[in-house]
Image (cartoon, rainbow, N blue to C red):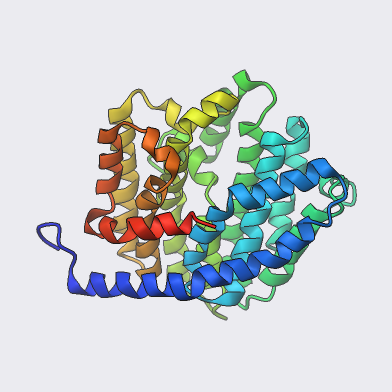
Length: 351
């Protein structure tokens, strides 16, 4: 590629993915969400019914973005939508629901490893079984489990899935600790325990990367094969954690800064010293992710995910609150494909 003009092969790939997204992915996401919406309407408690509704409505774009990884495969789209909705409901419960202790938040998030593996048991005393939500959380987790365990290559990717699901659960418990002053020190100590020099990132970049579900979905995509190649599994692990996952969550927190400040929620972007440091970090996460994606045996869909992430978040109306030079810097991460992807990103955030 030269002079900011997209190479013909990349243009063809971009065009194909746009057609797949519009013609198959978006309709499949709507189809996958329909039974979940119907089930949420059966929640008797009005508070929990509203929390479920809020998660589905305000975070629908998470499903619409993540389902790109299914590339039109309906069964994988349904699994992605179900697991993402499970994560979004848990996030809404801990952010906006009745106040919970750190132990209760940890207990709730124990459904995530359960949702991805037939060998993990959910204790009968788990809070997930005792929420006054008419069994909605348990239904989501069990639905994920039933779908995931049909994947022929699940056992090969399960160690990586378990690690990602467990770190995600731990992150949420620490990030939503009732004592706001304990969140950063707790997260830093936890990140340092798990990253003993393996990944050259800051503690907050490590922690942010654990909050991304994209690595889980990429691995589930590989599990559609009876014998997924070990090189692809390890390659995906190294690409998504912490690079693409870190970029994903840092961009999410970048556009949410004002909202998080109002809600007194912890925001990873606030850990950087200034705007220049933010741009440097985003560029590093993106460029390292790009270098590693290009080494994958089967890289195309992951190249598409990486290319679309910055534009996907620039399409958020909250991005208009960012300084203009920061928006331009984020837009440049996408390169010449940004002009193609911005209208699509805006569409992906529409109902």
